[in-house]
Length: 122
Picture 1 (cartoon, rainbow, N blue to C red):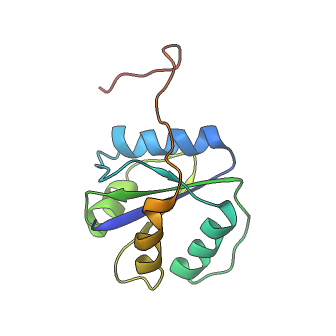
Picture 2: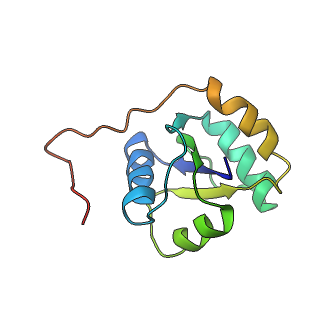
């Protein structure tokens, strides 16, 4: 696991769309399945990683380990516009080790889409 993506969103549907956007438009590879994260904890991660005060709390959050390095993930993330706030956490961040140890205990998120809303990759 080289980096983690923490997704903070206004709703569960926006969170799932952001995860799909990371795959489809950001061409990021997930090292494991996305996991549900407590929104308050995701807010704390943002404050810790960004070093700035929180402007708005989120209502849904997820975390996923990436197969891409933090620098590659950040570069790709800058080119897309997911409907949620995505924070890339690398081993250089103090919270990384705690997250890496906790991630396997968190509940998995089902990213399957129903056929009506399913979009095929380009």
